[in-house]
Image 1 (tube, helix red, strand yellow):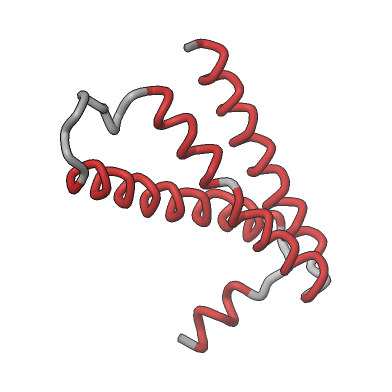
Image 2: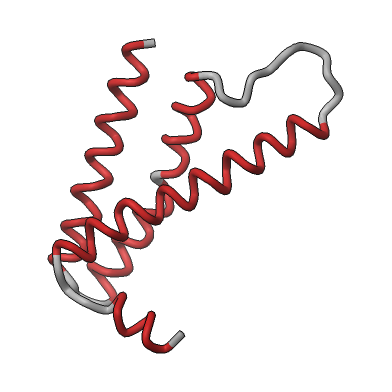
Length: 105
């Protein structure tokens, strides 16, 4: 565990891009699983599809929130500018993908 924490404490663009992809991906998986589980438990009044494009877009938007807190930690607490910039870059790219998916639908 100590080696993992040491690996995460690097000031580089690569680490920022990695964290900018992994944190939203993990959050997306958690939110999608919770949403599917909640729909499984709810009484069926109407058919709701978990993998509908509108639902996916909303979960993508929600999954960007934790990366903002990770970026804040790296920029303000650790003073790792390059890592924070990488996280910010990936957050913007995910926001652009969200916007494209939202307008295509």
